[in-house]
Amino acid sequence: MSSALESASPVADDAAVDQRVTDLIRDGIIRGEYVPNQRLVEADLGVEFSASRATVRSALLQLASEGLVERLPHRGSRVRAISVEEAIEILEVRIGVEGLCAAKTAATIADEDVAAFMRLRDQLIESVAEGDLVEYARLHRYLDVRIRELSHHVTASDVLARLHAQSVRHQFKLSSRPQRAKVSVLEHVAIIDAVISRNPDAAERAVRIHLLSVIDALRELSSESGPTAGT
Image (cartoon, rainbow, N blue to C red; front, side, top):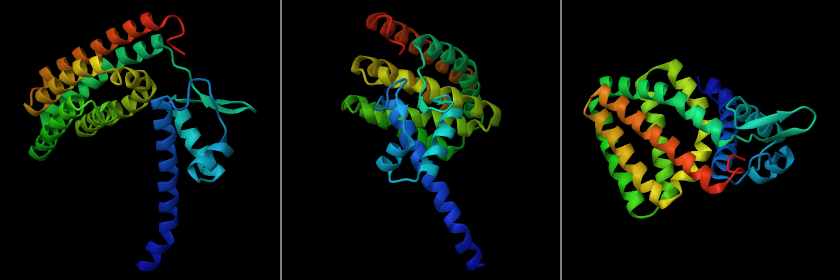
């Protein structure tokens, strides 16, 4: 038995390394460390993350499947530019699917998950009160993921994983603005309150209100920034 586990461990380690590099590049794209249309050179990324070119290539293929990276024939990869208009279209689709997940989570949430959501609620409020907007962005992304997972709706979760990755870069820009964070934290609290009160209709409605608010904020940000806002 032990020999079988030992022989399997290098594969598991390789998978963990691949996932780590994928997560780091994804996070860099979301945070704007890699800008739209920037070339992603496998050799450079390998040095940056102490990873093989095969690992970096695997990560870029995964991110291409998520719509964050473009693979260019004979020219490698670059960060995919997603305009504000496209991000808004994605958010419009997310309203229905994310609302469905929230409703299903509210209908079936277990007591231990209610307790975890209550702690998360406090952490979200605290992060905004302390001005830690990076932590706030991390926490509300985690909330989105947990609602998807607890919905146990595989198809909706798969759709949202892809759509969320594509629009989250623009949402990160919004959540890094203190005044916007003060608005959105109340919207996230409303979602949590509806879910932990086991009210599917209220949970779906709270998601709709939040995402429509994000759409309005994106349009406002785009008008402030001018025609280059989507690049």
